Image (cartoon, rainbow, N blue to C red; front, side):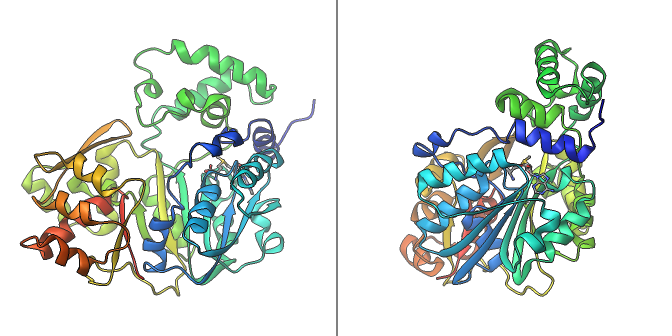
Length: 406
Ligand SMILES: C[S@@+](CC[C@H](N)C(=O)[O-])C[C@H]1O[C@@H](n2cnc3c(N)ncnc32)[C@H](O)[C@@H]1O
């Protein structure tokens, strides 16, 4: 019997079960949006609110195409010229991504191979590199990040996603359990069948069963179950090891996403605790927030080349233009309710964000075209210069509102 290496097992998995499972025909009825890679979000955090005239974009380990299709569509809708490359070692995943692009009439170049060979396969420089859910499957994630950095344009940046150790509570227990019940050398279909027998009958105290932040095994089909519980190589990061990976890789952290989830005040009401947390340095604040929340199962970050200079526009810059992502002003204003507290549930936790009294009026005036100065003149809200930045901080903190420059 030949023993397969971890690399072989990872390749075999993504050929047999391209991830995430997608049916190209669904492109006719919806666009999947998320982070990293959403146009308003990466433009804000990486490009100071204004994209280069002609973008070169790389999706490294682009899989079945969620991020790639989203950004290609958003760039096309915005009339921004872009050259988009999808690099992946799985032919099966690329076939699905290519069909999705074709149905939408989007032009994407597909390159097959490992991101470790990116310099040879898809020479840069790229203005934006998206690497979502891939580095943590490599034998050496730092080598993968270094390879990507070597093809990053000087003014450019990347959107990264790696697994969150704390939020994935229970996942590694189940991977251990399944290694005993369904050894790694067994055929993937047999291992999957064992996992499916096990899942419905887990004890109520099982940590995966209790973890509301992880749902791939519940709604990701066979590919989701395999990727989560039967993967032959994944590692998870706490926020400090993720930031360490970024900084050791010679990159600067622009923001963790969603920013509010990495702010201890999101979880602390007690004034004394808030004061102590407020005095911590930025990294410790993120560490504290992650430990308090317990539900960050994936870390997303925008990172920039060290020579990069653009900063996100300041909220009070009168020429900055607020733009929604995945929502609109009417929807957000309605969600603020009569008590002016924005309530939303993310990964099992009910978040509450108090807002200024005038937040709904301001939200309704944001249409993606009007500048901050124009909105101020239109809404005529007393204390706009305090209410608007406070409103923006909350909505930007949950990655629903960003700024662009004309
Ligand atoms: C978990 S999927 C993520 C797909 C996509 N980025 C997303 O978030 O929807 C991981 C993808 O990375 C690809 N992959 C893994 N190792 C790779 C490598 N060394 N080079 C290129 N692609 C790789 C796999 O084939 C798979 O399609």
